[in-house]
Structure formats: structure tokens, C-alpha cells
Length: 204
Image (cartoon, rainbow, N blue to C red; front, top):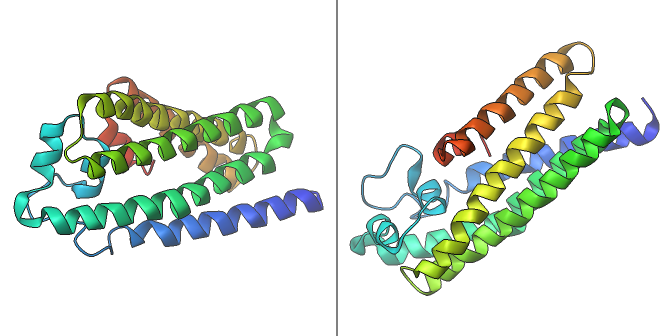
């Protein structure tokens, strides 16, 4: 392993740790859970997957609408300013560190990560628009849904490619790579079946 590769692995680990630290902060935002029964994946993921003004109104029950809107705005800022940059850095640094095992695959993975991050940021923008013009209009949802699909598709591809490269290494990395590659493939199947909740629960 070269010094440059070692530095990439260290930076990758730091970015991954930052993403792991940020992730639980979403659930710690006051009011983020809403005040009505929601699916097991929670109000936050439910909001990311809304597809109509009616679905938004149902999620943001009148008795807790104001507090949930504040919480959702906070979560969107946390996502856009911290979590998306952290997971993007993690993926890109990981793929750069794995270049020696397949440069073309690594660069394809980096392109997928960049596309996924852009879709994720655009998704957040559309969700901000929905909150500002509650409960949103059909045009906003027509732009939101492709962004959600694009995000999950791109990140599933990136995960599969990173796993593929990791599986070319020896020891524990090979086993972890196979698991990651399989996870990416399963996520692709979820996206193809329009089952975005399943992809979310895989950690994407």
C-alpha cells in the first residue's frame, strides 16, 4: 500500500465516522416523529417518499403540523449541509482508495456517487419547496419523484461497484465486499420494483 493510498483510507474512515455520527442526529430533532401513527420507517423517510399533496397533508397532521414542519426543515438542512457531503466524501474516498483493483470501475462508481448526491440535494430542495408551499403542487412532485428514484439508483450502483472492488482484496475485505456488492444489487432490485422504503432501510 502506498502512502497516498494509506492517506485515502484514513480520510475515508474519518468521513465514514462523521456520517455515522450524523445519522442518529436526525432522530434526535425535537418533533421529528410527528404525532400520528406512521409506518415503521418513521415520518422522516415517509416525507422523503411522498408523492402527492394528499400524502403530505396526511403525514403532517393538523395537531402537530407546525412543530413537524420546523423539525423537517431542520432535518433537511442537516441532510444537505452535513450528511450528504459526509457520505459522498466517504464513497469517493473509498473508490479512490480501491482504484488499483479496477480504475474504470472506480471512476464509474465515483460518477454514480456524484449523480446520487446531486439527486439527493435536489430532492431536499423540492422538499423545502413543498414545506414553503404546503402541501405542494403536482409540478413539484413531478420533479421530486425522479430525483428520489435517481438518488437510490445511483447510490445502489455505487455500492455494488465499491463492493465489487473491495471483493478483489484479500481477507475480511473480500467478504465485506461481497456483502456490499450483494446489498447494492438488492437495492437495485428494490428500485426497479419501486420499493424505495426497502432501499432506505438498507441505509441509502
